[in-house]
Image (tube, rainbow, N blue to C red; front, side, top):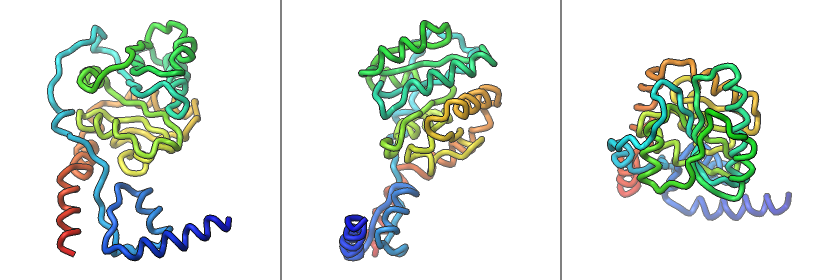
Length: 240
């Protein structure tokens, strides 16, 4: 406890020395305020990506049926990414609706465990590691992104990337991105980290909804979490 008090005093002293502080999202802002920043010091400069790259058309490299609702999970197969949460929840959702597919993209130490859990499920495909261009080609053919990581996922830029392609996301509430980009029913869905039944419910709900439901929400988020907003933040800083 005393370390936390000393940290707060030290950080507060340093933070108040700055003319301005850029924050990337709501949790970052909350952190800075907690450690003594003044509201007047804070300038919003969001986490973003090159939206023009992700918006580009890519060739269809898949052989999947276009009639299926495809959920894509793309990350390293490691503990903090919780790949097996996606598989467990999907399998439960599939029992209620077999018009869905799960694409697992990536590699890592938990891959064998995930393959075993999937048990050659007819609607689960493992694509292995893909470079950025190959990943874009696969993601562009999906309908939803799944991001199942724990609290060690400080943001989750893959959500920004998918939003640029018009793809909504189902995200665990531990991910930093959940507080800023996810609005239930508008840009995707949020669920309690590790709660398989809740994740299954969100997958089932998403599979039944008209995909145009998310169009306006995604467009609005893309406009906010953009290089244009970063430019405005820098100009605001320079005119202080």
